[in-house]
Length: 373
Image (cartoon, rainbow, N blue to C red; front, side, top):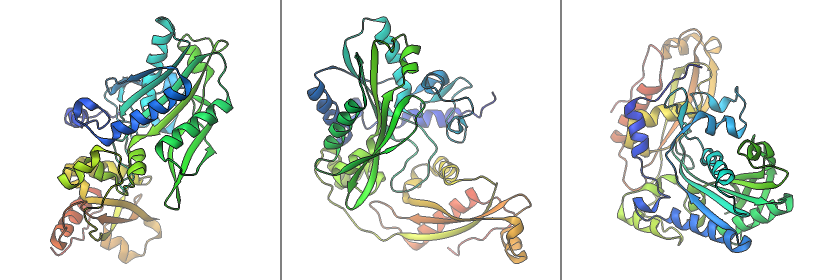
């Protein structure tokens, strides 16, 4: 299979990004969330715990095949996965660390009951908004035990995790499908009047265990994956994911504990709508990844980038075709750009310049409409 691989510069930039969950990179509230989750399960189960970190470059085999992703899974596409080579990727989930950990259990004398907790950054192509980034943090929690673990054990695990992440908040689960679990669930908690997804879980698929040399007749498991950025936001009542990496001392100092966040400012958003020509099938994830790559740190000023409407070239009136310079086979996307710096005032000229930079990156037509800066 031919794949589009990362340039050396993009790979270096990804690997240089600070992992907020790793104490060796400095303290952060995220580490306290990880500790609270692991301690809650360790106390309830009395099992051994292995918190694990590994190189973020993993094999395609561990990231996909050993977790039973089909060969034609859309997530494998280079639009969503950052390939380092034809056989390696920047891991798309911390679950990619599970197969090697299971191998280790099978070949090094298994404890009868263990909690595997691989943690760290994962790398995706994602939309730009207040809840998503291209390099989120994840924590997997897999309980592997000799004997049977069933749906009742999974419900108990969900209750323990929801209680640790959002003490006292209501929670619910919805059916979900994962290739590496059975009886999959999506977990949501209700915060400030809305339901927020915190992770997904299920019973560890017997074939994943068997592939590692753990006989499903004797071994079973619970599998859970959690988004740590979202977890910190829940615990601290933070509305904007960009604040987790803020360097302003008024914000950064608040990211050292789990007390509720005290807003530093409430600057109004600046909105700019863009009418662009693009290739069919272009989605918000692709646009977000292109903007993040090109703008670097300046992309942090963008609070939200949303596709409001899509119109084929053939359905546009002639004056619109001429104004945009759209070509046959392209589509017209109406894109809303919301600009708001987390800590600094954004002037109209600054907003217009950034709008034009984003427009130049995304518009693939032959005519351009620039701001009067």
